[in-house]
Image 1 (cartoon, rainbow, N blue to C red):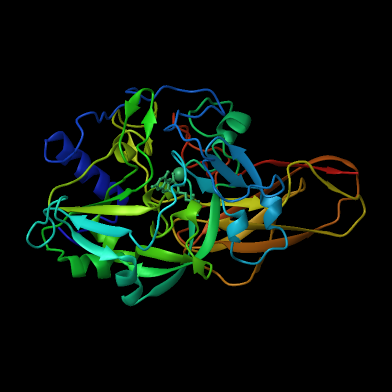
Image 2 (image 1 turned 45 degrees about the vertical axis):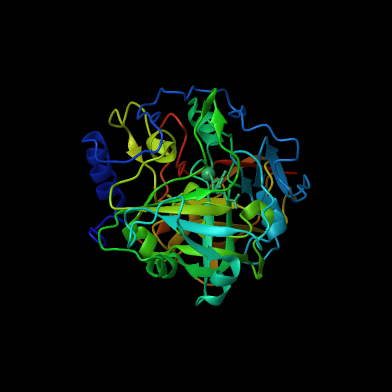
Length: 416
Ligand SMILES: Nc1nc2c(c(=O)[nH]1)N[C@H]1C(S)=C(S)[C@@H](COP(=O)(O)O)O[C@H]1N2
Ligand SMILES: [Mo]
């Protein structure tokens, strides 16, 4: 089934859900449920599912308040902290999304273990094919520039703009970063591990603590990928912006799955199951599905990101009336590069000037001059259109877990 269109998310999900219903999908745990209910209660905004107890701080790097807003084990980048920065998000400002806590892993003793029925000789989890860190460094490397963005980025606007209650971390727009990742293609490692043409799914798994929520242990953070996507453009990254991958971002090795939601990019990679049968985990049956009145009962899986835009400004930014200002921001899309960006400061949509290179898997910087003459409260808005012709809508489709908020964000500013 390799290459049979399973990078197309709709096909992938339909196929997998049918197979799963027919009892053909494998789950190492019998507790998966494909409903909006299950152990997933609708929680109030800002509350977090209980993580595994950890005495140490959940995030290792410093989180200065001028760069980050912290929510429990997670921290989002403040958009004003990108003002004046270059194309890439510096590591010291890159958002962190941890289900539990950053583990500290010694690259010297670390092993990547591959096993399963999709590999030649069907190695077991007990006797896997192993790669050391040095093995990976010796394989041909590749460098890509790619965004990693949480599926819930922008979630708080379901409540503040649309009056809708959704569960999960109340991110603003800062659960995204763009970095230069260097590593080995997953396809290279899979080939060396003996990938067969019968393989259909891979299940990368993190080495961080088991994720426990609502009294249920969901095990290691893991989410399956179809082999077609795994072979397309996925990287096993060991460098971020020219430095060894830092602890919070997956040291020693993480997956980078371009264009797909952040949960795909498993950090602190430990094992990869490769299977000739479809694989499932709570991260594709329970979480990261679009559920709600407008979706089928079992929901639809979330894979590719939507088009979004943000200003490099604080909320309630102040501008001097009569002054010459430049509004700057960035737009991005899981569908590919950005074709057009427009900005409205209250008197209609005007084209913004695109700055720097266009990027398929990163973002597009842009700017537009602004000379407000009258003091008072304003709302500034930016909307982007991507290469596939999709433009940000006024309203994002509601789903109970608040994923994929792609609507135009109304950003309040003051002219004084
Ligand atoms: N092992 C592991 N991988 C993980 C996670 C995690 O908690 N554990 N979080 C995922 C989620 S939901 C996101 S959005 C990205 C965030 O990557 P970052 O923390 O490097 O920004 O990592 C993903 N990979
Ligand atoms: Mo995420």
